[in-house]
Amino acid sequence: MKKILFLSVLIITLSCSNKKEVKHVAEISCGQCQFELNSETGCDLAVRIDNKAYFVDGFDIDAFGDAHDEHTGFCEVIRKAEIMGVLENGRFKASSVKLVDDLK
Image (cartoon, rainbow, N blue to C red; front, side, top):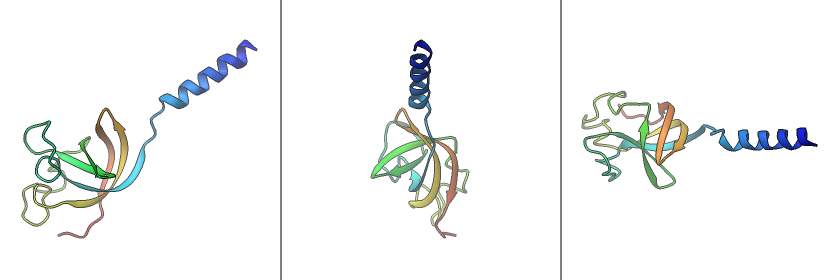
């Protein structure tokens, strides 16, 4: 009986603490310039999921070209991306970001 109880507690603990990555198609842009986030200075990559914006950890705002480019830059336009990661402590910890719009 003790073994079953211990095993049950272990399984519940592991399943609760295991943060599963989620995949979304979301808006992606500059958090400060486009999503009105002001908790950090400068320009930082952010995503908007379910009408709420989160700064992105794991990818730099210039990883997809010049952030200030007039037609494609994240400080100038809001783009669409397929993102994968975990929401943690009010930030999106990204493991994958793939732009899905056709801006060029």
